[in-house]
Image 1: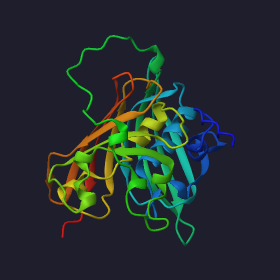
Image 2: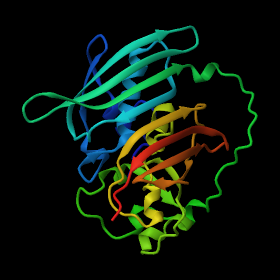
Image 3: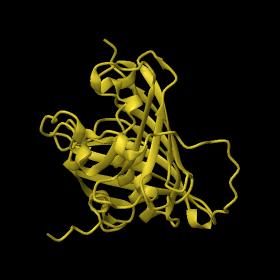
Image 4: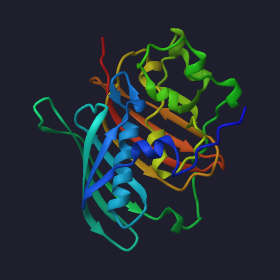
Length: 281
């Protein structure tokens, strides 16, 4: 039997599902795919990539350097509109804002997300790196576990996992066995299931695609993102990524998640911090 060819950057399900059609200057139409949902809500990292791709088209620079998103209401699969605005266009950096909107039952526009971002050219950055950061220590991929290793999920409960290559560090999997560690940590090998290599836009997905650290704190249920800021540091090398997410403080029903994404060349390629809400029982 012939082997299916590996997806490539620009020719993959992720690229097709994050591509919006330009209706007019600064206005884009998209049909949000149900393939990137958790329960019925569309994943926040996928949505960030949708907005990131629209801004890459609207701005004169190709790559997101920093993008901050406020999640206002839960997005649903189906038609949406992205509206962009160029705030400033400079020689090395340009800044833009974008909103994603959908329609309610009465046909009124409802804003789902609003972002502010600065774009540049990652390929033009100098190679000088001075850092104390170290890649996360994760067991080899064959010693880690993915969704396919657990019980069969309820149909439609987490469609996004069918599109991800996700192998979780056993040390952060206590929640799946009914024995959470009490530490706010989650670590995993990460990639796209169809073999597409990572690029700056897919890094926007990677920072928000692991199970919530709240699970290892013994808290179950939906953990919606309130705000997410992501920094893209360089173009990732081909191969699987390593993602490490930690939470240090849960207070008043809110927690922070700090994420680092490392590529196969041991480079820190993305960082993020998000504020999320948890439902305490």
